[in-house]
Image (cartoon, rainbow, N blue to C red):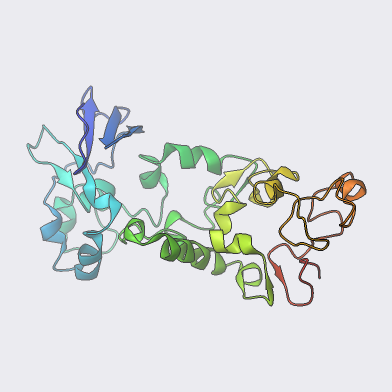
Length: 268
């Protein structure tokens, strides 16, 4: 399959059967996915047909990454692109007068539609610690806007959007603090695997190596905040005994890991 910078193409391997396997590519990205969403008896009608009823979604969708997904349909001799690449062919939905939930797939109700492409995220949701998507307590759209233009945002705004999504539920961790943990500026994903992890709290790593990703250099200042564990640095507090008691945030030291209002060393 030829790669293109203009669109992602989903090519059928062995027909459009339910268990078929597909591959799409976008520039240097190649991903194997299962069969795209199909609705028995329905045909592709095009995004322009959806626009009269879903004007806002169609307008915003033009800047979304999902807008570049295309599904060839040799049987009906028409490609499914845009809305129908995730919601399935829409002819029966249109004939039913656009009735909500009628002859259309809604990823908000069932993440299986998202898993067709995002198989890696489905695997992460099966890890020991994960957001409760698998249990049906939330869905992908609680955190992601599939119609939005998140990927077009500048880096700073994109990180802000990530933290904003997390703060909907994790308000205490995301609220402003007098003494801020600078890692919060990098986004929650600097420390957490947000879909799932083998570590508690969905941490990317379970030990001090999580902190050492940023605090890898010993500080030269006697009370420097930006340094590492200061092991062997006699000018600072000796951390060697603390390290054996647990991680930086569980050994009784930097317990206010997201930020503190009373202590610059992130202690309650």
